Length: 109
Length: 120
Image (cartoon, rainbow over all chains, first blue to last red):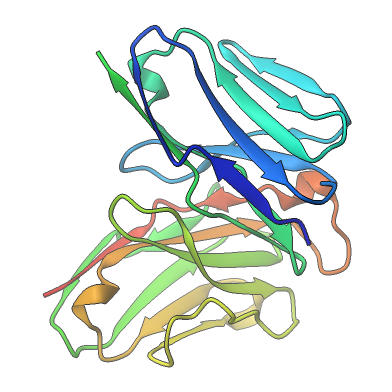
């Protein structure tokens, strides 16, 4: 299975600053998914990356999958208060997808 | 249904009582997960159902926790003799994933709104 470590665990940024979270694996990943959980809410699927070197954008969010398919990043440009929440890249192993601690983003207005 | 439905949305119980939490997955989804999320923490995997296969119970924290899935659809998570440390939000998710066939798009998980359990 795929074991993915996510860093940082917490990130505090001033509104308008950029933010990046990383997911790293020691083994090649077949794919990677990203989810967002707003405070008080439940995780919601954002995107899935499959191809080596793939880059996808959703407005101010840029998702990248490494050339070696061992890492991925989510970059948010010019953060806004609506970006607050926890971002997850779940692990796939033993034929199931499981979530870990994610990266919690807080915005300082 | 249109989405994953969980009930009740909130449950307050006394220490030592049993509770049942219900999850109604999206129609046709074969995979169903239960997670626990304590305040300010990540998602803790509890149990995974996949079709008619034996469930993966590797995440259940103690023998007070059990879950079943009847008819491959609705699932019930039961916590016996509740303790204060059981207080958390219990989240259910479902997906189209099938055993032995990891089709990428079908492994997207759809979550319910959760049940907030408070043990007094």
